Amino acid sequence: MKWYDADHDYINDYIDQWNRSAGRAKTGMIVLGILLALSGFAALAAPLSTYAFVQGVISIVLIMHGAGQIATYAQTPEFFRNGAQLATGILNALLGVLLFMLPTSVMAGTIVYLLAFLLIMTGIERISFARQMRYYQIPASSMGTATGVLNIILGIAFIFMPLVSGLVLSYMLAAYLVMGGITLVVEGISIKKIER
Image (cartoon, rainbow, N blue to C red; front, side, top):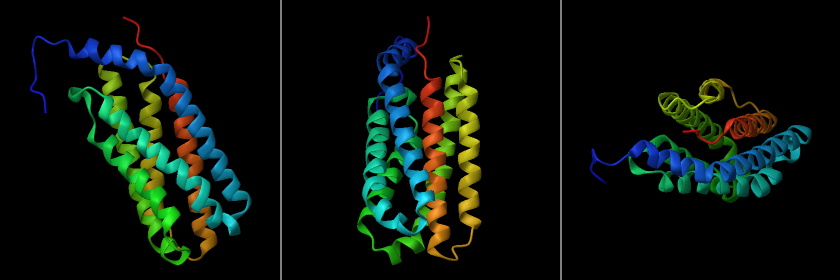
């Protein structure tokens, strides 16, 4: 860990890094969000075959998203790092691996709790990030707060929603994917370069 250096301009360092990666981040978030949302809608359209679909395409998308979040955490200047982003990245990658590797019977019993925890952690990370953006007077931070609150509410609903059948789980997975996709698209659209 680096010690705080009073002579270093952390804010301009953060702004420079933000501006260098804003275009790539915007495009990546929108594309990944659309893929997640389309995957969720496909799972809604064919709930009984969701497991085969989930164990393939969605697993890969979640692993890629988790790896991206971990890479973003590693590239963020140390002073501005957010541990919730690292945890969310690890959980996304773990969720993707679990969906790919586990048999359906095991997956049906454990996945809802992992999804709930992931949604809650993502919501906390979004709210924390929006708070940082508001501190630096970056516009559109209210969208991050709104999507964070929605993620937390959906995560709590997942915890208390009974798992009566595989059909309910299919719809829950579809709701997670659609919500995650919409969140990424909204946040991707709101990314802008910081004017000095």
